[in-house]
Image (cartoon, rainbow, N blue to C red; front, side, top):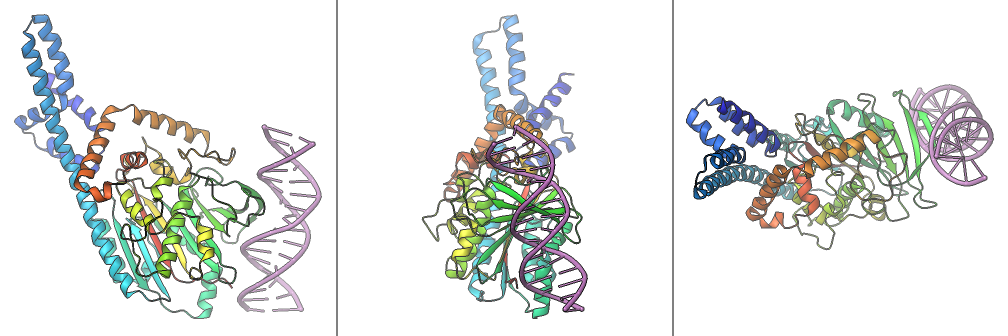
Length: 483
DNA sequence: CGCATTTGACCCGCGC
DNA sequence: GCGCGGGTCAAATGCG
């Protein structure tokens, strides 16, 4: 009877502390699979301490047991809990180690690729995970790509980094023309294979004017994605091949800002919004406004620097004096707030965070390159329901950003906002969650001081909401010249 | 009343 | 040269 009760309590504990994702699930599976009574009792002691302790305390009090015994009991229980926490820490550390190891390996690979890099007609693809996205580039069947994919498949948490670069086949002008004319359908084509994903796909089309095009795909319920800027709709058109109307917006943050964006629902998946930004902002982007812009900017800048300075790589600190990307990324606006933030930091270290359009336009090298950043959601995101930003973070890129630039109408709907607020408070009020996160972070920092050095509040939160959720894919592609 | 959105007309480039 | 399609303009309309 009491054993059953204990078991139930333990389950609750597991649910509340379900931060360790696969690792902890395994643990639970082991426990349940093994009907070893002894083991179970030991485990339960660990899991039950507080409840048991209280019960005993009451009992003891009623029977008038000596105080020393009570203290001893409590001490024992606390010790048991400590042991359990140690175990959890160990598991989490292992996961982090594995992830870091993957990351470093891929980083090395990327450095190799860079050395082989040729100035023209090449595609660089960086991906953090990528399951769920069948990139069109895969059709070219590069070995590196396949290797990277294999790497990502192995990752239990769905957190992996893969960097690929490969040459692009030369195409004749006719093919180029076709591709250019149908670039939007190409984007849709990616989507139809992608399952749950969010993406930023950037393309530079107009070498003459250095105009930048960045396409962002994200699951979004609202009519547009809130990206922190203010937009005014100036037109709508039904494009051929997609019954969903395409809306045209102009940036109204600053008068005369030439930036425009097109918004269209994906034909294959109506929940996905394809937003294409074009042009160069003539004003600074709102502070904290957009992780999206930062991330896209990161991608763009990365490409710029990479092109201009081939010696610079993703290696952290290779190019100093750039604020870390994470400074822009609140846990709610970061599609993949994860222990990979160090990755993102190092990434952004070499790319800076100025706005993508400025970056692209200011470079002589950027034109003729295509750049894309893709992120996909892990499919079995158990936390998705409870922590919905994991699902719809891209839809609400400004949540938690503290931005005063939030458009009143364009923002996510109130329902999402409400549920988000509820979830935030739920998490904040859950001490077990906090403890587990803190333990994971501290062990992570201890283990790897370098990558953990930039741990910030946002990062902590980011880690907490990252479990097995998202994957990112950052890629850059070769020239798509428009006209 | 002012501002944003809607929507039909118009412009322009490209392909045939 | 013509038709098509994407993109933009601007008057009409709606909303706070």
